[in-house]
Amino acid sequence: MKSKINYSWRQFWKELLTWTVVIIIAIMLATAMRVFLFCSFKVPSASMLPTIEPGDFIMVNKQIPGPRVYPHFPYLLGEDGKIATKRFKGIRKIKRNDVIVFNFPYNDWNKLEMDINLNYVKRCVAIPGDTFLIDNGIYKIENAQGEIIGCRENQERFRADITNGKSLVFPYDTINYRWTRKDFGPLYIPKKGDKISIDTCNYSLYKKIIRYETNNPNFKRHDGAVWLGDSIIREYTFQMNYYFMAGDYVFDSVDSRYWGLVPEDHIIGKAVMIWKSEDMNTQKFKWKRFFKLL
Image (cartoon, rainbow, N blue to C red; front, side, top):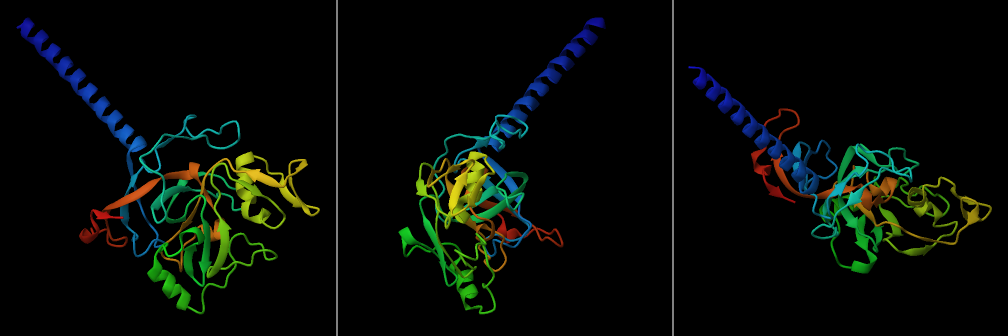
């Protein structure tokens, strides 16, 4: 009788150990997939209509442009005062018209700063090296003339709306750039390694991202010159790639038209599919939107 009891306990501990190992491996695999491959987000707003509806759950591919990790977990600031990130090589770079999920870059509207707790989904309408403009409501790229950028149907409707589009937008410089939602740009989107002349005019276009890259709040326009700390600068070499993000529902989308460019270290990945959708009021499934590719 005693040997049978001992045998039962040995079997119990053996099975417990086996299942513990299986569960640990499963958790590790799930975590690795979420960090390096895919993650999911629920979209609560209408800023990407008609492509994405409120209540859609989107699957995000982190292999585009590459998975991002935080070396100083959990989200500690690096020596430069920013949240440190490291990005691994992905399967491809971001292209125009990709739907992208990213961390909101302007926790303080006067300062570029990553908000880990707030994620946005928008369409990338301009990539590094592009010159972007809005011509009477229509999105255009100077170096890719003829290419349809963003949701043209909504842009055409916005163009026809004579009551809309007159409010000032980024960079809110009424002296040099009286841009509006209908007439915006041209704005050059910096890429890593670009050396651009900086003057008192285009200072307002790039001041936030230069302060972000240099971690120097004393980048300013003063006495007819542009200063970085105690020195006058006339050109600047950008350390990162930047992107112009815009919602498909141009009538009501808080995007790069209002707050400026998105740095590459803020990007989480490309939205590839609506894997589930539910009505925001009734919580009933919207089956027709299940597994819809983006």
